[in-house]
Length: 113
Image (tube, rainbow, N blue to C red; front, side, top):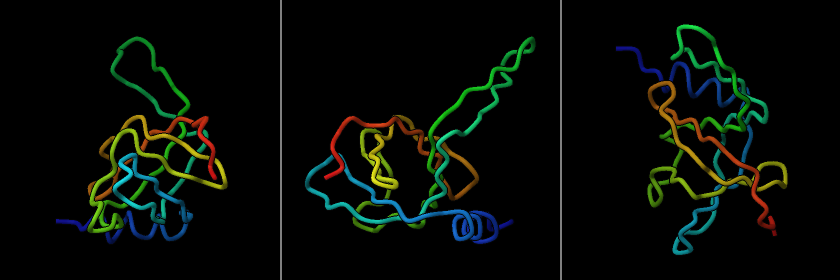
């Protein structure tokens, strides 16, 4: 079986990714940095309808599941990430290529202090 994480996810994040700050909603955990592939204007195509394809624009961050620290092993809805001094809240987490997650983000009004 193909090792998607090492042959697809890892090279993509290394080439296109950037370091972001991950901020858990649970204050018992400290913020940490993680490398992810950030897209402010990601276009998704929904093909559920046989009549019309609908595209939507989303703010997303693709991360490798392996890159999450052992004390905080998975992304959670409600957590935040800070990218280029802008804070985004994670509003949805979707499976992507095996070994990675697509974090759907919403720009947060919280201060990034």
